[in-house]
Image 1 (cartoon, rainbow, N blue to C red):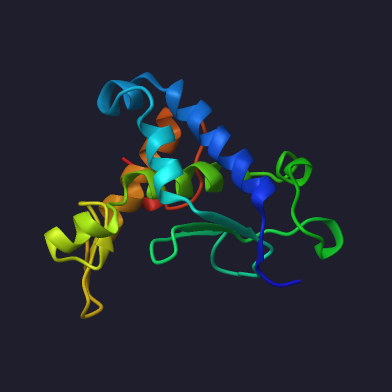
Image 2 (image 1 turned 120 degrees about the vertical axis):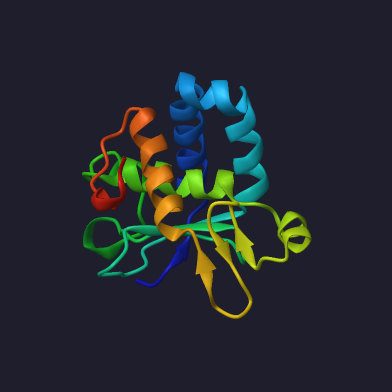
Length: 159
């Protein structure tokens, strides 16, 4: 099965991320109540699942404002909410990618900053260069941990 649009999972992961971040005092003190929800609905248009990857459990794509979860259901069927609830470490991937979506600047903000895409910490330029990947990934995982989910990815970048 190839990468597939999955609206059921979109609803689930957005609600999951909102719940986690709205219950994180550090996050709400920094960004305010409702910030996560506003940015997720603004910056996540689609969620895909069932992509095969040996190097990534998921990613946020700024170009089409999507999150892809690189997991599939049993016997390669479309991933379901029930499947997600049984996959070890998937909560980390979901929240991590949702935080990327929340913190990334929209296209208009990027144009003003003359960057292709980024969060302000991570900037990707048209010539293919980038600045701040380690800081961006480390901060994202730090927020995941502050929201109550143990991280295992990018362990060497954690504070």
